[in-house]
Length: 341
Ligand SMILES: [Zn+2]
Image (cartoon, rainbow, N blue to C red; front, side, top):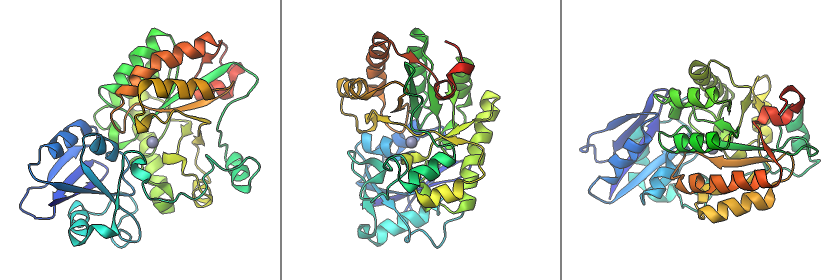
């Protein structure tokens, strides 16, 4: 068994191997398809380790049939910087020392496998203290219920194939949507964010490396958000007004650390569950079965194989239009009078 660690930084990814004979490799943040191809061509059984601040690659690796483990605190606390992961070689060594301290990821649960999420604002009961604190920060899960508008949203991009396909489908129906890209994944792919913005879509902030936010320091969270908003404004010319925490992991601790950020938090009230790849028909019928006026729908344009999402999208759009819904961006959904249809 060969043990590989994947580290992330402001520039991209490094893959190192515990045997120290297989040479380390580097990939740009936007080169995820190449990174996956490289790992699928390693000609011996492989155990790959990512840490809990890297949620951008595991979906691709699992979809390619690779074996992936996640290292969580406290195993990674000692040497982890505020921004960036621990070294790839350290992650590979953690695996070589014993896989029992790590969590093996399964496709059905994705990058949160075995992680017991504290109640997050995404799912906090209405009227709870956490929900009230989220609302005070400008956190929304949906728009007004008295107007026939729906906001489709696409997280974890950009992806050189799937983001383009989704933009083409949206254009065919003259529908607008909101994208929440990962800053690191946008390296070298800023033209896709520019293309989305030019077509009238909203581009929000989904952090730099798709971390599990409760694992970050306050400084680490700030850098994740600021660098990503910088990258988006460099690509589109507009600084994002919205952000979405990966996994909706808006715990009380994260709410405390979020105070003072300009980006308003946009969660969702309808989860397409497309990341679990249940089939295009299942994705479309779940969305169309759950939408209400003002719904924000969570979908993904990257983070794994999104061919089912692409396949489901025309049925979802047609189903919304047949029911008389207008497809809006999240800001249009929240302030409809500023954006007449
Ligand atoms: Zn995400």
